[in-house]
Structures are given as structure tokens and as C-alpha cells.
Image: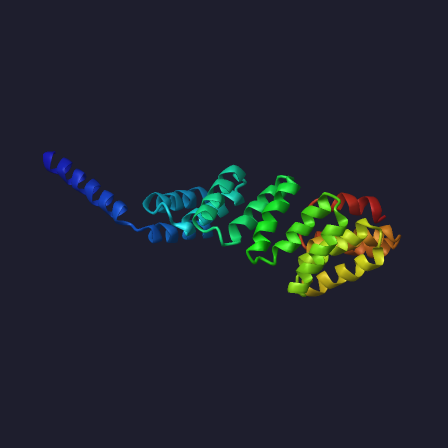
Length: 235
């Protein structure tokens, strides 16, 4: 019995030494593996272990922030991204991610502030997301400038075409809206949101057949919540 007890203690000490001998990079790799398996709580534990071992590890804070964002722990995600900014203020990614969180929380002016900081640090993709926030605040002129800038930097940005097309539709410039939404679908033929937006625009143009065709395509591609609209419009 005494021998067995000693054996168990020795095993515990051995396993404990393995844990403490792991490096921050190993915890990061383990976290990435758990993310792939959608074990998000396990991934957070791994990234936290990396942080504990290496308190200035930017990748550990960033990876943990990304997972917290994904599970909608917005407060925790912002805290991690702000730590990334503290350690690496010149990088745009953390500013952009905080902007996206604020946008999801419908804090549009706050999101604009963060996207602007990302742009100042070289993230041209943030023009599109900033444009969306400006559109939500009904700053249509500012939104249009941002969508144009996004397309200037990336002429195949389907999200920018969707944003600008939706903006034109809101402004009742339906023909321009169709042109942009056509382009978004040309770039990405499986773009659910673009089909829905173009369908609504065709509806405003009183072209019910094309409106129904696009809405049904959006549903076919997996968009949820569109069936009720189809049942109302497409009789």
C-alpha cells in the first residue's frame, strides 16, 4: 500500500513537471488545435496558460481575444485586444477588432473611432467597416466616401460593393444599387446578403419576379429568416 502511494505521488510530480515545462508556444499550439475542434473553453484555458507563462506574449492575448469575441464575451475580448495595443500600439489588427465589437454592440460612433485608428495604422479594409458604421448613423456622404476608398484599395471587395449598393438603395438610387450588387455577386456568386439586398432593391423597383428570384436564391444559399418575406411577396 505504501509503495502504491509513493508511486501515485511520483506520477503526480512527473505530470506536474511536464505541465510547468511546457512553453508558451506549446500552449498556443494546443489552443489552436482546440479552436479547430471548436473546443473554445479549452482553447481559452490554453491561451490563458500561455499568458501566465509569458505576460507580454502578444499572440496569446490576440488569440484569446479572438475566441472571446467569437463566443460573444465582448468585454473580455476588448480587454485582451487593448492589452495587445498596449504591447504593440503600431499594429492595426486589435484596433480593427475592437471596432467590430463596438459595431456589433451598435456603438457605431465608438466603432468609427476604432476603425479610424486602424486606418491610420495602415488597415485599408477598415474603410469598408467604417463606412458601414457611418451608414448606420445616416452619415451617407461619409459612408459613400469610405466605400469608394475601400474599392479604390481593393476593386474586388464584394463587401464594399454590398455596402455601397445598400447605401444607394437607401438613397433610392436603385439603378446604381443594382450595378453594385451585380458586381458583388459577380465576385462572389454565393453571397447571400448581396442576393437579399438586390432582391429588396428589385422589389422597390416593382420588379417582383426578379425580387423573388433573388430572395429564393439567398434562401437556397442558407440565409435564415427570408422565408417569411418570400411568402408575403412571391405569391
